[in-house]
Length: 212
View 1 (cartoon, helix red, strand yellow):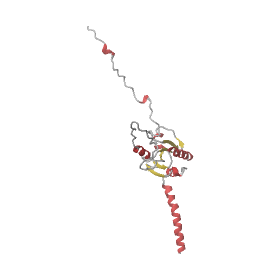
View 2 (view 1 turned 120 degrees about the vertical axis):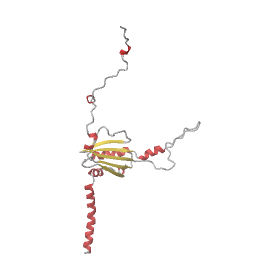
View 3 (view 1 turned 90 degrees about the vertical axis):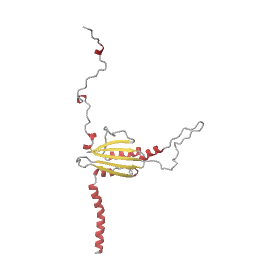
View 4 (view 1 turned 180 degrees about the vertical axis):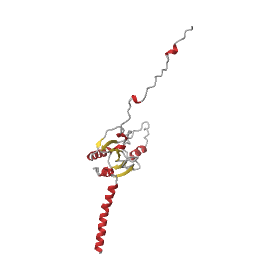
């Protein structure tokens, strides 16, 4: 009886883990599952954070998914591996206006696949802005004093060098992406009648009336 009990406990423990991961995979957003399968090296996906909003069935608002990833290498090398991974996964480059909606730092590209659109933004980490803000102001040398090149100096506080990059992956349902919809026309016929021109100098004001 004891042996049978131990065997049953072992079977339950071994079956619990696959069952747990199976349920989680079935209930999780399949888009995140596909992002997990992107073939990128370990240094390009050190840490990731997921955020989601809206409905998967586009009830009221369509689903919006965003994954923020930390990479150990620079923006150019990181963008190359993610671009290749997206192409291998069946995503197609998408050239469209408002990609991005405003100028941003780093490399920003857009992609489409089936009923989804994807924005890929690879940018420097936030610490690069902090280092620029903390850089001391160099006073001009006094008369006769030699100039000192401090471009390669190490910070006095021993702060670590700011390296790596940050990757943002934003995925939308194409039906909920405004960039998929027809853009407003600028046909002049749709703007109504043009107003009459305004004359600043009236030529009739210079005429003198002859007495009768």
